[in-house]
Image (tube, rainbow, N blue to C red; front, side):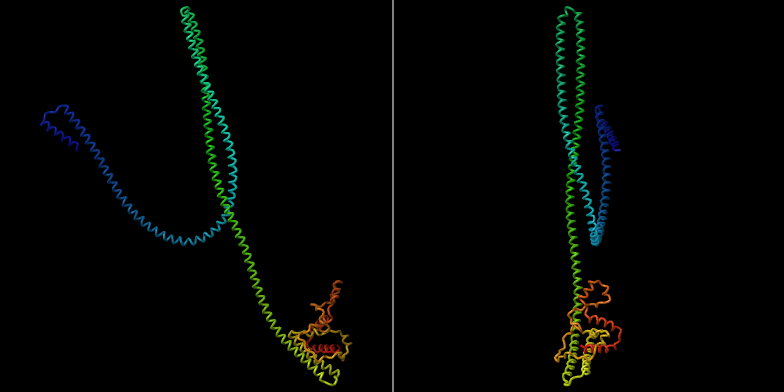
Length: 521
């Protein structure tokens, strides 16, 4: 090893020196030995330091290798993270497109959620009203707590004043007792000194006279003094005990005062925390009231909008109904206009036909009148009746054609159902009282009167059934008597019944009856 080599080298050097130089003394040997020892210790220290440096070098090399590996791993990790971030970016772009598509779907869902939130708004409104009531109850309880706290603070202030007054009294009593104790000690010391001085004077004075009596007196005085001292010591002990009790009471009162102060501090902290809670609750209550007020305003606006919507809906329904009715009325008016146009055309056609019929009737009457007026010789009854029958047949044919067209009265309206006994009493061949004027003109319109009906009394809608009149009351029959049905109406009704079911061959008989009735008139 190196130290051994150095040691051997030194020994060889010493031997050479010994050979060359003079022998060393003991002091030099000891000096050299000490120097060698110090050098060996330095070598050991340097060797330990070298070992430490080698170990440190190995540690640093290991750390460098680990750092190199960590660097490579970090670079690879960063590359992987870069690739991962690129993949994440691509995924995020795809996700963004998907979210953009999902946003449209969520919009529809949010609209449905809006309706649900309106429903939840009503529920939260009810819940907030209940919470408001609970908070109002808590505020009332906090008000009671505040009053109770003020009472407790007043009580604590009174107790503090009482404790302070008692403490002042206690301190004054302790001061008086200490002062009294000091004064008593001073007085006892003075008395003892005076007594000792008086005893010493008396002892000096009587010492020469009576030694034995003096000793006895001294013993007695010693006994008395010892008794007095014992009393004074007992009194001092009592005073000390009383002082100790007062100190203990003071300590107890201090502890009680500390507890009271601690309770007061706790109450103050609680009151402060309660005040903070009350402030927070009041702020929250105000916020809730503002929110509730805004909700109430929104509710009122929604109710107003709903009522307005209902009114507008009703107005819209009314307008739609009016429009529908107007459309129906327009359709009816159009139908009526078409019907009126058709009726007007029919009336015009009927008017034209009626004019033709009237022209034909006037022409027939004119021919008959001209034939009767042109003859100079008077006509016989047979000729007159034949002419009249021809004229009546022509008129009846015209009237039948008009009735078939619906432009004039029917044949049965001119027929009078006369009883048979009246027919037998009639005698044909009666002459006319008046001649027909030659200047007779055909009327423009069909007259509304018939035989035995001048049109002065309005026509009844229904004929009166005479057998059923007997069933009616007296007043009803009187009313019918005041407004009787004309005879020709009753006869027309009877003629309708008589004509029902008869063949058409019966018409010439009717014509003959009409001819006979006109001839009789």
